[in-house]
Amino acid sequence: MNIVTTSGPFTHTSNTVQKTMITVLLALIPATAFDFYLFGWPAILLFTVTVGSCVAVEAACLALAGQPIKAVLGDYSAVLTGWLMAMSLPPWAPWWIGVLAAVFAIALAKHAFGGIGQNVFNPAMVGRTVMLVSFPVVMTAWVMPHPMFSSGAPGLADAIAITFGGHMPDTMSAASALGHIKTELSRGIPVTQSMAQVPDLMDMALGYRAGSLGETSAILILAGGLFMMAKRIISWHIPLSVMGGLFLMAALFHAVDPARFTSGTFHLMSGATFLGAFFIATDYVTSPVSKKGQLIFGLGCGVLIWLIRTFAGYPEGMAFAVLLMNGLAPIIDQYTRPRLFGRNRKGEPLPLVKEKP
Image (cartoon, rainbow, N blue to C red; front, side, top):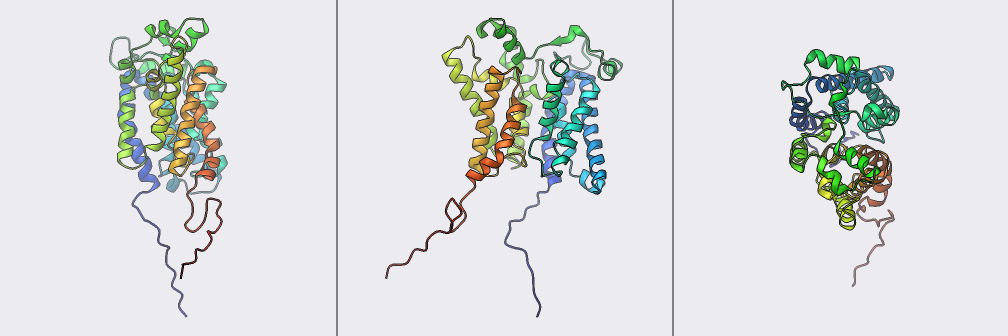
């Protein structure tokens, strides 16, 4: 007797992990290129070190696990992790920040859980958070944009001294918009006065402000996010709910006390809101599967971002918020999974309905 085995009636697509990663990388290119122009050679060197370190740590972990290095490195997941992490670091940070962040992101947050597709927490945000908690001074040393080839911008030799020698000029240091507001509030200066000393919303949208690569060029990051939505790499549920939760919380409290709380528009344009909403919170592995669950997940991220920015010790809360919600993603999936055909929400078979004679 011949037994013929066939595949079940599953939907097949041409999408692969590699194609998905490449599409996300393409969406990041315009914002990253503009950021390189804004922050010059030090940002390019740190970016190269961070991405290269992630690929090297990935190869080392695969070798230790006895897995083929060439085949798995070809999925570009380590490149994307390093890319996103580099965009969350101070653009003029020393080289060892990128190396250490890569070790914690790839070895601890990814391969310790079993490798690609098995991690509970977003690797890039784990790397950034560990660096922020361990080296808060270095991780909050921001600079104003110094466009490449402009007067006062560091050349390649100066960039090598900054990235690999740690010689960051004190005269170029600056505070991010969120950090400035938090510092002024701690001194008793109301938001209405301190807002006069931060860039206007147009400059913040275009990227002419202090911060990480992912905190600038908000318009280009938004364009990259819309590109991914058009390619159906991500859906609108998480980005919209992240920004909606953040905006609603900020707008509500700003309406109650504008001297203490900044507006919803300011929070959307500040920090890494767009990068986090479109490129980080939407990670397939660490976010819920169902659309209802994604809305809850994104809303939770938005609320937590506002709470951390407003009341915690750190001015930016994107990484902390995403990691906290990553931990809740399995629970959200448990309670928002769709009902199976022929069963109720608890998974119990539905009673048979007898036809009337």
